[in-house]
Length: 308
Ligand SMILES: [Zn+2]
Picture 1 (cartoon, rainbow, N blue to C red):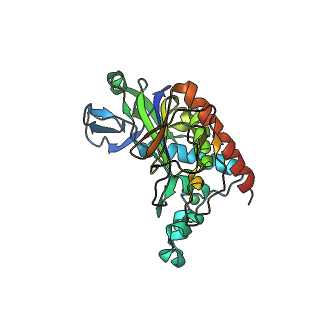
Picture 2 (picture 1 turned 90 degrees about the vertical axis):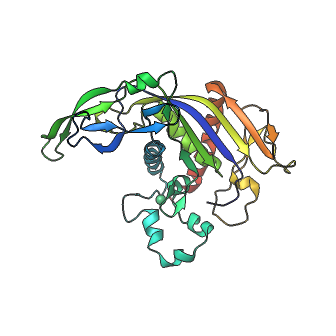
């Protein structure tokens, strides 16, 4: 991704399980009688100590694969990251790409790899690790046991099991999505995926086909900031519009989709300090309409790019 940072969006939100949730740790029980067969992933947090948590990589994986599904549904050319046809494999095996610039590589990525990255280039979107809130840390770590079975795909018979799953059923995790140097359509696609996650259509972790991993989201705070704004940037009015990366005159040809600034649902206060212009939106009343507005650039991108 381009080196100069021109815009950044940070969304803080809560994730609450709506039933059993299991993000598997790599650790198998082996001979340890204190562990179940499948355990929830844990880590040592500086303030909270040993606790279950939602790794950012798991959140990103779930949202990414959902965005792939959306992309294919609307007719975009989306690679399959698990095959030789993935953008990473395709570019990695092309000798011409060895000396290619970042812009040249970026141009040849599918929309999903542009947004989330792939093996040879970082993307625009990240999820931080999500830890329990202070109020719910005990409830979150008061995990439950469930029986699981593995079904043989061909015969339908029980192949393994029953085995014990460790699931989280209560409490709240604090998550953060960060998007940098974004195009407006990318925020729109993420907004659609997060809305669908709230509706239970983007399950997290293990056992999706059996109804595990249902969560609900609550938006807490959204900040949009533009670094490097030491004077009035000509033609830009951060208090009334949202600006994608193409508004900032990046010279290399990344093959960005041309976009107009997106009018904000209502004018908003801009704070400028240390050359960074920042807008802060709090609560669902302010964040919901803003995210909803970004769906229009996503729709425009699809209209111009699908079926090509
Ligand atoms: Zn791709």
